[in-house]
Length: 137
Ligand code: CMP
Image (cartoon, helix red, strand yellow):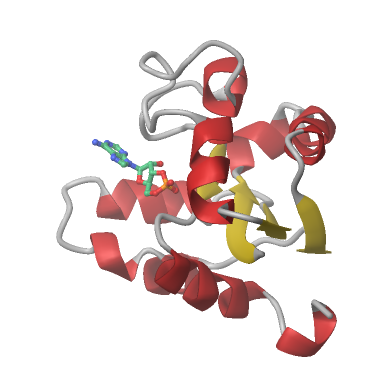
């Protein structure tokens, strides 16, 4: 079993899509280990997305992720990182496969409804950003 971090992003929370997204995640065989709803401030968003700090979209990304409530979800499944990336689809909703979460609920490459960790190493870092280990057992 391995873990990944999902974040239902502000656009999807705002459009009341969280329930439908969680249903898709569970139907795909992921176990929810932890789930919260919160608003992060801009500096927290900056730390979370530090790996992207040299990218041209970094400032807009931090504004967007701190602009409304988000729902981080710690997930468990075998091959969790790769399997979850298949469930969410391409970063750009227009390029995402039919039936994926980003195809269904995303708006643009920047405003794309959901985050998924891109490696086991980043999943571990991202999960501790939002959850205490003791909450997940
Ligand atoms: P996420 O999976 O949260 O990881 C980094 C985020 O940066 C990504 O989803 C998008 O929301 C955003 N992003 C990635 N590439 C671009 C881009 N080319 N233009 C704007 N935003 C982007």
